[in-house]
Length: 630
Image (cartoon, rainbow, N blue to C red; front, side, top):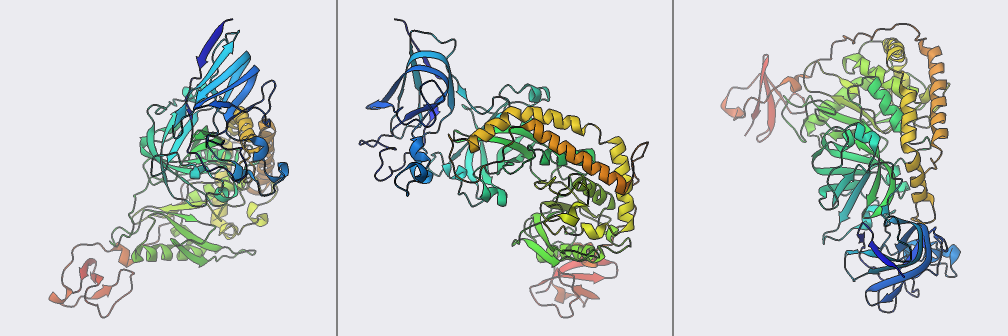
C-alpha cells in the first residue's frame, strides 16, 4: 500500500501552558501535558465533538480518521465544556475558566483524504510544532495549507510579547480595560488581493522578517463593549501601508457595532475628500491575526496627526511658554467625556433645546502651559459667545468655508454624534489664522438621524453649536451656495464607490461574523453586528442618502445646472492678544534697568509689582521683551 507523507506549509504557534482547571481533565492529562482535539466540519466530525482526542506517546501526538474532507483545526479546547454552565452539571464552569489559550491555531483545508493519520510533536515550553499528515492510499493533489479569514483581503499579522519575550494574550482579552502600549512585531501580507495591488499596495515584512511596532487598545465604548476591539499602531519607522499616507501612526478600527455594512466611515470620509476639506483620513479593509488568532475584518486607517501629509499645520510642543509661539498650531477635539487634559465651559447659543457641555480636549499638543491654556480658553470663549448671533463676529475666529463644508457632510450622513464627540478643529500659528472644522473622524452614528429633518433636532446627543450656527444668515448662505456647487460637481460617483466597496468586503464580512458569532469562537463579550448580506446593507445606505439628499434639496435649493465653487470668506481674523504678539527676545535682571512702561505675566494679566524669580512680558511702546526678575 502506498503511503505518502507531507507537512503543512506553516509552523503552528503554541502559547504558554496554564494551570489545569480543578476537577476537570479537559486541559491537561495526568502527566501535565495538554490534551488536544481535532475540530472541524469534516466527514465524521463536528466543531462540537468530544471524542476526537489525540493520543499521546511522550511528546508525540497522533490521531487517525477514515476520511478528511473540509475545514478542520487542532485545539486544546473541549468545545462542549467550553460553552459553559448550560452544557455542564457544574454551574461554576464557564468559558473563561475552561479556555486555556494553549493553541487556537489556523484552520486547515483537506480535500477527499482517505485513512489519514495526523501527527505532531509537542515539547513543553516549545514555541512551535510541525503538523504532519500521513495519508494511506491516496496522494492528495496538494498538501493542506493554512487558511486565514476569507482569503480575499490583505492580512495584517501582529505578535505581541510580554517582558520575557512570550506571546502576551492580554492584548486580545475581552476584558482589556486600559490603553497601555504593548511591544510586538508585524508583517502585512497582500495575500493576492489584486485590486489593491492594482492601486500600488505592497506586502511589508514577512513572517521570517517581521518589523517592530507598538500596539494599544483605543476608543471608549468600542473598547469596553466588544471582544473585537479597535487598536492604535505605532510602527518603528514610517510605512505606506496599503497605499495610505506614509507614517508611523495608524489605527485598525473594528466597526463591531456598524449595522450599515461597515459603510459609516467609508461614506463620511469619501464625502469629506469630495468636499475638499483640508484633510480627511483614508482607510483600507484588512483582515487581522494577533498572536495566531484570527480577529476578523478591520479597517486600517490613517490616524489624525499633525504632519505634512495629514493635518498640515505647524506643530506646537507641550508646555510652551514662549509668547511668540503659542498662537498655534493646535489640534483639539470636542469630546464626549470629561478628561484631565481639557478645557470645559457651558455651551451658549440662541437655539432652543439641549445645551451641551463644551469639552475642548487637547490632542496636539497634549499638555498645555498656563499661557497656552489661557490662549485656547480665550479663543473658544470668544467663539462660544458669538454662536448664534447674526454678525460676523464668529467668522473672525472660525473659518466659515470649512465650517459649512464640514456641516454639509455630517448632515448628508445624518450623523447624530457630530459636534458632540470625535469632532476636531485645528488652528495654525500666527496672525490671520482661524479655527477650522476638520478632520472628519469616527462617523460611528452615521445614518442614525432622520432622513427628513436636521439630525441635531432629533438626535440623542447635545450637538454643540450647530443648531445655533444655523441661525446665522451668513453661515446658511455659505451652506446653500456650497451645497449646490458640491452636489452639481463633486457628488457623482459616490454610489459607484459604495458598490465596489461592498463587493470587496462580501467574503470578509462572512468570515468576520463566523469569527465573532459562530460557535467555534465563544470568546464572550458582545457579538458583532451581522453584516453578511452586504448587498442589503449597501442598499440601506443608498436609500438613506437618496432620501436625505431629496429633503435637503427642498431646504437648501436644487442643484441642477452649473454652480461655481463659492469664493472663500474674507472676514478678517480677530487680532491676537498683546501677550501673544510678544516675542522672547532675551532674559536679564529687571532690577538693573529702569522700570518699564508695562509688565504682564504669561497669562496676559498686567502686573504692577513683579516678583523675583518670575518670568514676565515687558512692553515699551510697540516692542516687547521677556525678562526674568531676580
